[in-house]
Image (tube, rainbow, N blue to C red):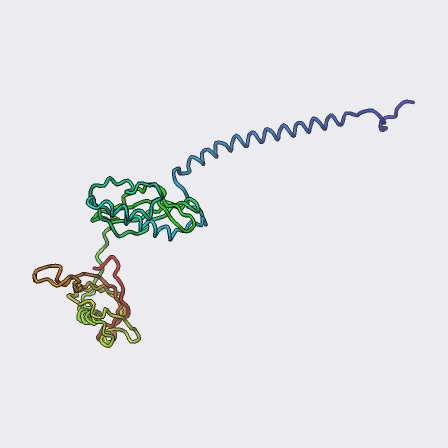
Length: 305
């Protein structure tokens, strides 16, 4: 019987499965091409990014557990022993270093036993934590007019510390360059009015007499003086800007600082005489009637007029 047009043929393979395999192969091929292209683009970008990352530096781990405060104190004590030596007394330095060094370490920690160095004013500069047990602690030190930084590798375990390698001296840098500032405006009349008032105030401030101080301060304000530990040698300058009844003024004074030296039979001995120390103050003052009164006193800013 002839097959009618449009009828479904039964039995045999129609070839649809072959087309499915072809399309599957194409999808796999295109996916492979996409992966190759993406990796090819990403690789140079990653290399470029890595080249911009600084080398030779170790970031401080967050929450490393390293005892920074105690290690800083340990390194400062070590620096005090390490940066003080005298060729005439080498064993003294070795004894001072012993509590900081591991067993078998050079007892002089690299010093050849000659010369003399005296350093002090040890303060923490920074600390580079490497992990929970290792860090490099850098402290400031000063010897005469020379400032240094000393980097000290430190290891810790069971609450104890040890210097784990050779220290390194680094320059501390000089003072920052201070740019010039414009001369502030002055109110000559106010400065003339303030001078006698401030001179009396600073005398009372040096004496620390609460009753006397109340004569020069705003009602309700209490200031503590020096209790005769200083004396007023001179009110050197007063600088007052133009303004209203409340202003911030600057006063430069010279304090007399009693000597702590043993009395000398030589009257011209400088160490036996009272020292003079010039200092600058900011004062908030208020004018009430014809007089100025102090509301607050602080250290001056860089511009003193």
